[in-house]
Amino acid sequence: MISGGLTHNSAGAILLSGVTRPQALTRTFRFAPYEADAGTGELRKRGVRIQLQDKSFEVLVVLLERPGELVTRAELQHRLWPGGIFVDFENSLNSAVNRLRDALCDGARHPRYIETLPRRGYRFIAPVEQAHTARRTLAVLPFENLNHDPEQDFFADAVFDALTTELGNVRSLRVISRQSVLHLKGTRKTVPEIARDLKADVVVEGSVLVAGGSLQITARLVQAAPEQHLWAKAYACEMGDILTIQGRVARDIALAVQVTLSAGEEVRLSRPRPVRLQAHLDYLKARHLMDQNSRDGFQKGFQCLQTALAKDPSHALAHSHLAECYSLLGFWGHMPISEAYPKAKELASRAVALDDGLSCAHSMLGWVSWMRDWDMTKCEAEVCRAIQLNPSDEHARVTYAVFLAVARADTQAVEEIEIALDLDPLSLHVNSSAAWVHLFLKDYQRAVQQARATLDLYPDSLQGCYVLGCAEVGLSRFPEAIQAFEKAAAISADSLSLGYLGHAYARAGQTEAALSVGDELLARLKRGYVAIKPFVYLYAGLGERDRAFEWIEKAFEQRDPMLFWLRSVPCYEPLRADPRFEDMARRIGLPRR
Image (cartoon, rainbow, N blue to C red; front, side, top):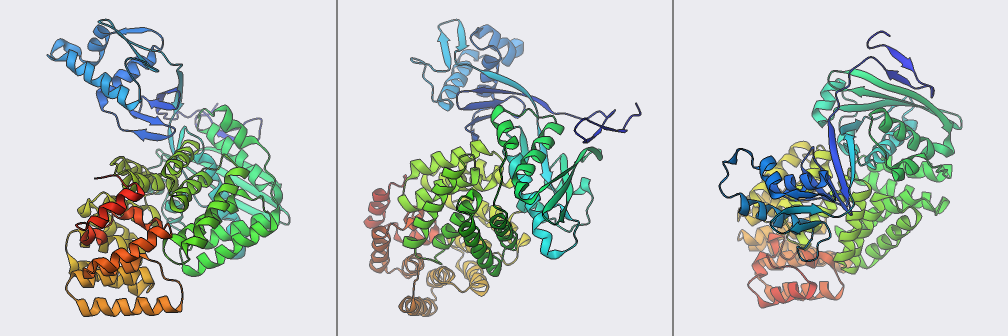
C-alpha cells in the first residue's frame, strides 16, 4: 500500500490510509454524576467544571485508577510527593483529601466515594467507568451551495448548523460554535489558517446540492497540521429525511476521528427523524435570517418560526428558538414581561417534552424558569442538564455563567464564560456576555477590556456599548460612560438606551440633560409600553430615591426579574445606602456579596 494513498471502505467512504494520525489519548474516569479527565486535569459534574486544586485532583486520579482497592498513604507520598523532600506530607495529604471531599460533596463519616482506612490510606468505593478517549477539537465550516442560487443558501447553512449541533452532543469532542465559524464565511484563508484562528485540529468541510425533492451532501474531514484529508463521504436523501441523514453524517465523522460514542450518543445520531418538509424549510429560513444579526432579520425570522409551528406543532427546534425570541423581547424591554415570559416558558417546556435530548431547549427552559417563576433551583438544574447533553453548547455555558455571577455571586462564572469563549471566540453574543459577567462580578477593569474587545470585533454592538458604559459608571468615569451610552442611543434609541444615558448624565452632574431624558421616557409611557428598568436607572442617578423605589416596588409586584441584578449592575449603586435596598434584595433571595 502506498503511504498517504486513498482507499475505500465498505460503506463507500474515502479513508486516508498509511498515514500516522496524531492522537491526544487521555484517560477519562466516570462515576455517579462526575467525570474526571486525567489529560486536562478537569473534574466535571454533569458537564459543569468543578474547581479543584492540582494535588487534590492527582489524589483523585490515583484512587480512580484502583477502585475498590486500598491505596496507602506511603504509596501516595511516593507517587505525588516523591524524593522525600516535602517536610509536611501528612498535613498536605489531609488537606488535599479534604478539598477533594468538599468538591464531591462527600463526607468522611458516611462516605459515598472516598473511604478512609485509619492510619493506612484510602479506598474509592463507588463504581468507576474508565475510557481511553481521543480528544479532538473540531470545527465545521459553512458548506458550499452547489446550486449557486442565493435563495438556496439556507440549505447549506442548515447542514453546517445541524452538524455543529449534533457533533457538540458527542462528549468526547470539543466543537467550535457555529457563530465563530460563520464569522469566517467567505474568507480566503487556508484550512490551517482557519484552524489556527479557531484553535481546532480537525476541520469538516463539504457541499450541498438540492435536486428536486432530493438532497445530496458531501462531507470531508481535514486535519489541520499537517494539512491532509482524513475522510470523505457522499450522502443522498429525500428532503423529508434531512435530520436523519445529518445525524448519520455526524456519527460517521465522530467515528472517523476515532472517538468512542456512548450507547446513548449512538442511538441519538442513528435514529430516524423524519420532518414535515415545508415546516422545516421555514425553520431553516428563520435561522438563516437571524444569523444576519439585524432587526429586520430578527423580525422576519420570528415570523418564519411562527409559520413553521403553524405547519408542524411538533417541531421541537422551532419551539426552542421561538422561546428564545420571546425571552429576548421581554428581557430587553421590547415586550411586556407578562406577555413575553409566559409564552417563552410554554414554548421551552413544549420543546423539552418533544425532545428531551435537546440541549438548547433545556437551557432556555432553565432561563425562563428563572425569569418568569423566579425559580433559581429549576434554572440551575435545567442549564446543567443542557451542558451535560452538549458540553459544546456555548449558549448554555453563557446562561450558566450569568446565573452564577448574578444569582450566586460565584466566581466559577468566570470559568464558564471562558469555556464559552473557547468554544465561540468570535461570537458577538459570547464576547459581550463575557464583558457582562465580569461586570456582574464587579471586575470593572476587566469588563472594560472585554467590552472594548467586543466593539473591536463588532463596532455597532449595542450590548458592547451598554456594558462598556456600565463598567465606566462602576469606575466613576462618567464622561466615558456618557460617550458609550450616547453611541448606544445612536445605534438604537430605545427606552433602555435612554435610561442608561439619563443615569450617566445625572451622575456626571448634567441634571438638565438627565431630566430631558426623563421627560422623553414619560412621554413614551403615555403612548405605550416602557419597561421599568430605565426609570429606576434614571431616578437612581438623579438621587431621587423615593421615586426609584416606587418603580422597584412596581417591579416586585409585576415579578420583573430585573430585581435580581440589584447587586450586580453599578447603576443601582446610589440606592445601596437606603435600607429599602437590602430589604428588597432579601425579599427576592439575593446572596450577600
